Amino acid sequence: MKLKYSRNVSTLILSALLPTAAHGASVAGSLAGSEGDKRFPPTLNGDPKSPCTRAYQAYVAATGHSAYATTPYSRVVSLHILCGARLNAPPQEMAEELAMKSCLATRGHYKVTNGGACEIAASK
Image (cartoon, rainbow, N blue to C red; front, side, top):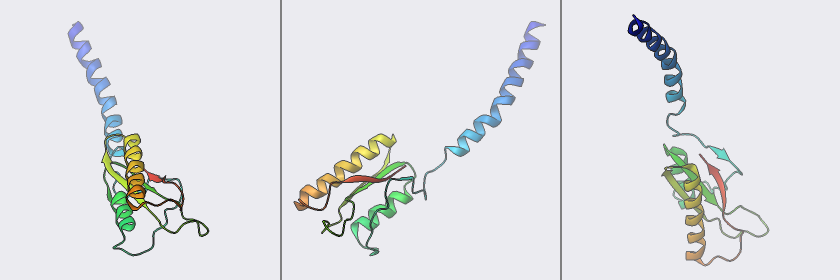
């Protein structure tokens, strides 16, 4: 008799948890198409062939945790807009760290000394 009642209780508990688990799975779906947390609007020149425009579009299209880093635009100081991105990293923090490293590496490659430091513009 005791076994009969424990099965009923188990079935009741599982049936109550199933809709909650299904809802959580739908919420945790793909991040594709999302701009995520925009910390400041990234400056894009509108040229679809520009490396930073393509990197930002790839960031938005990415399905996993990603980040986009760029130098903020200032008309007084900025001569160049440099960027870096990391797509589909396991955690969001790692994506941000690697996007910053990518942006800093680009600054170092082009030996840019003015125009501001790299900052995370968007992260998801």
